[in-house]
Length: 482
Image (cartoon, rainbow, N blue to C red; front, side):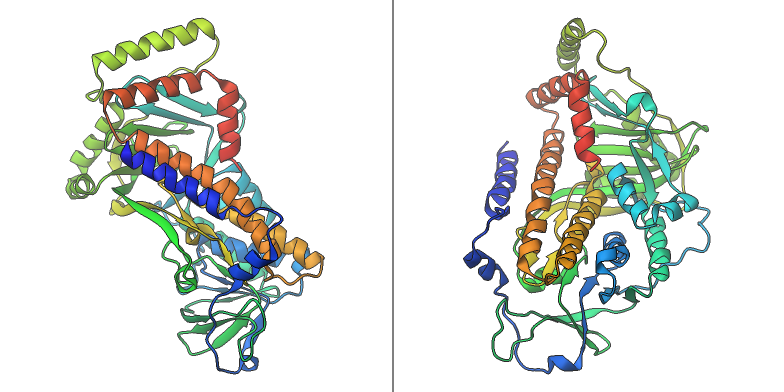
């Protein structure tokens, strides 16, 4: 409970300290802009862009596409910098990738608006219409669906497919957006918020090639280990969960409609099975580092047995919890006889994709500031969450939609794109959305990381009660779908 309290206080403290009020004082605005600038060098010798996006992953590429397609930003010089090679996918691979994202309807709308979603659906994605979440330590469960399974809840898409679709769209926007692949940034120089003698007026970016370029606005989309964030000296609240995620491609025992996302909370962490096709699913098993390493070393048959056991076994349940949960469920049914939803059984697993088992460490991080003078952070550079809610990518795409809207309005009004006024609006709006989501995910992770009877009873009653309240479930889905 000490850890839980500490984590919650840290998140709450961030919200109190760093969510800016709409009418922020001029003094604070100037203070936020005072980033020390190196002196010297002739800024006129380098190219000046209106916007540079640093990082060409899913979120960075979407940012560049979104800006390049906005009519109010037509004629602006936009550059996307990516340290890696160009991701081209002429043909969808026969095998599925282990790195997938759950794309919410809100994100799908964003991708559709920038002309990318059609490319994704032509390549490969799998919608699901229902989600079932249940506890390994009790009979408690909750299900989410939309309009009696008439609408998709979300879509499981391989990250490589998203990037390839964005890359294809960027190729068609070459008049509006320039892309430099294999362009590693080695140094940033920051401007002052007020023009000081011999200071650079814009953000100056030096590449490994020796080229120096400048921008009126730098957007850092360079991931959880963001160089932009680090070089700015923006503090980050972060902690590791002492957990790793084991991911793999699963072959199901028999073909099925496979339109349900499954997640079960084990005492060691959540295990999720996400649909990829009628015969294959994606595994995301969050557990201790030791167990994760042991799972990687198992032969395929033993690994498959461990997965099926994790989804089906009742070894963690106790008679006390089962009795209490049954009494509470019966009481709720008497009050609301038509509410609730029946339990479904997950499909069994028969095998795994070749060389598809990998693991990566889990943690949480949140930048105390999303912006500085002429700089904004988006995606994992600003926030990193546990994968249990499948919201990591959606939070980043939400940043893209919000920042694009504010920059579009600034351009329409003839304002400086790098000015603090609309950047502060971006920070305020996104922190008000991201912080509650991150706090809820962290709380859920900690609440389900124990098999102590009081905690199990608490979450059993909470899960059963929520499952009987359609209006509350709709609010949860609406918030997660943004």
